[in-house]
Length: 276
Image (cartoon, rainbow, N blue to C red):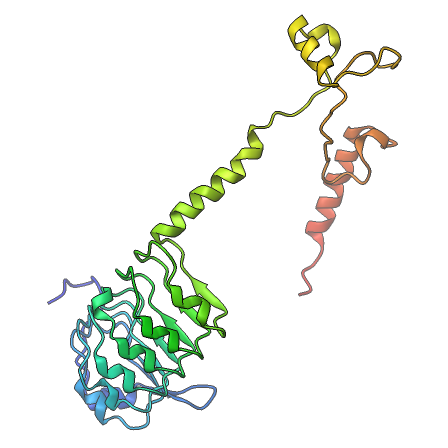
C-alpha cells in the first residue's frame, strides 16, 4: 500500500472503468485515458474494449507490457511515458497503424528495444527520452514516415547513424546526452574566446611607458603629431548606445536628456493597453 497522501492513488481498472474513461477527441477518435492511476500491471481488460484509437497509460507504475499487446491493433496513438518499463515486446512491431509512440521516462536499455520497432513504418513521432539508452536498433532506419524523435536525457556518446537516412525527420531532441555536453563545452569555449580580446581605449601618449609607446608606434596604433587630438591610439572600439536615436557623438543634446526621453517613452509604452 502506498502511504496516504503520497503518490498516485491506485485504482483497480475493470472493463466498466475502462469503458467509462473513453472520450471522443475533436478529430473524432476514441481516446482511453488511464493516466496517473497507480497501475502496476497492464490491465488485461483493455483487450475487450473495442475500437480504441488512442491509449494513455502514462504516469503509472507498469513494469512489463503483455507479449500480445499487438491485439490492440486499432491503436494509432500509444502513450506509456513515466512508467517503469525495462523492455518492449517484439510483438509491438505488428501494430503497424501506430503513428505516435511515447516511451519516455522509463527504464529502457538497448537490450530492451526490439528490432521489430523498425516495422512501424507509419510512425510519425517516437519519444525515447529519459531512459538508459546508448544505442538503438539499426532497423529504425526503416521508419521513413518519422518526423519527430526524442532521445534526450540518455547515454548516447554520438548521434545514431541512421538519422541522416530519415528524410522526413524534422525534429530531433538529443539534449543532455554525453556527446552534447562535450559539444556544449566546445561551443562555450568558442563563445568565451572573443572575451579574451581587450577593448581598445583612447589613451594619451603621456600615460604610456616607453616600452608600450614604442610597441604602439611599431604596430601603427598612434596618430601623427599633426593631429589636433595629440598622439593617441587610433584603433578605438566602436561603441553602440542602445536606446539612443542618434550616436552619442552627434547628439544635439547631452546624454542626460536622452535618458530622460527614454524613461518617458518607456512609461508611455507600459501604459498602452494590450490589444492582442
